[in-house]
Image (cartoon, rainbow, N blue to C red):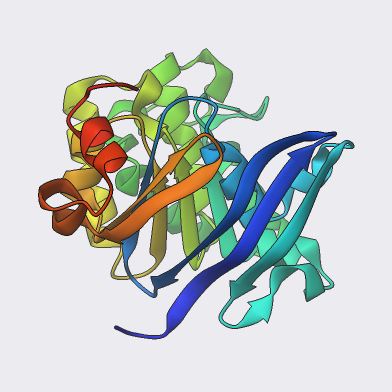
Length: 251
């Protein structure tokens, strides 16, 4: 197995006195897809928020343990904005900027100093294509992004996350607002994107994790029950609870 691109060591998360994640450890090689599955409120989203330090936006949240990006503790990275450029995040429901479709995608690159219009035009088109949105919006790029349908706004959020070519792309139930046909198209795109980046996929669809992930982590009641190669977990899980969850007995 190649060296870890991302590694968690004994990561715990609290919201006040409530423990949301309990000493979770795993690693993800570069250019792999890790699927994270488990019931609602098991700590999956909290885990993602520790990776790019967006958990710091929550006043009563705190963490213990270590998150390593290429061997460096993310807490020791002084410029948190540079960290978040390296780790893109797509949340379960779209969070659009009150800007045009074009400007939604071009916003972060402009802040990074990219202002040459032909370069921006190409970047916007490529990101919208990767998000399976270009053909639907290419003739109305000046439309407010918030005027798009929910599924289109979610894909616009994905295009925006891709606009800085992150090293790691975190997806938190990205398909929750997207129809099945579009979901399958985006899955195909993501499988190509892993040639350029590492992908962390939180999903409530176990078969989506099976289709896409190189390895799967099963989290239940704030604890990492089991993680390992995808087919191993689905065919020969080490823990009975893992098999019961993946077979749909609870969720």
